Image (tube, rainbow, N blue to C red; front, side, top):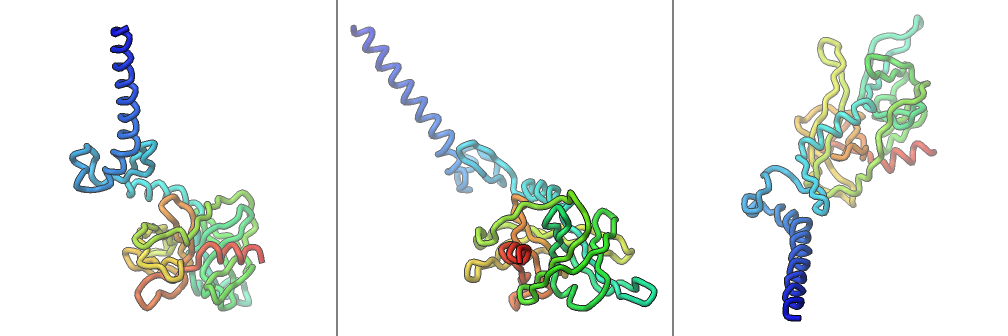
Length: 249
């Protein structure tokens, strides 16, 4: 009997110790690793973020943005307005970035672009597609144009209200360079502050960003920017809630 009691106690110790080790490894260590002073002691590489402590999935924030940028790139376009002439299409008058919203060709862009009459085109992958003006919300700074297409790539929709001050985001603008080449540029930024739950973004470097779609680090569309910036230097944005409302009107 003493022999059995001895092994019973030993077995109990192993079980409790095993459970404690799992809890420490899966929950305690990842959470403590978020404190810089404990990174070296716990053997966690500096500069990484523990995304899911339970699964111990560790990913570098910069890598997350790179993956998201490559995912959304096919959905970002340029929208151009050309002068109309008696003989057809004249010179380029204005351009802005845009984002494909639906597989059948609705594209969101800056409302200022369509404030003057002209011939509209959506440019993607070196293809210029004629577009028509569908809807405008001048107060919110958003316009929808429509191209005749099927099976276009579309982004996931995120919630701008889920941001907190200091959170990372990125914008994706498309523009022509001085050699008339189309350039797609990702601008990484952050939320400077919240106004009634709506985030204000600041991107580096500062660029002219009319119609630029804004994404979270998971690659979900959260807003598009206006032609203007705020008095504090942040980009004025329209959240996806405004874009969705305009789509269904």
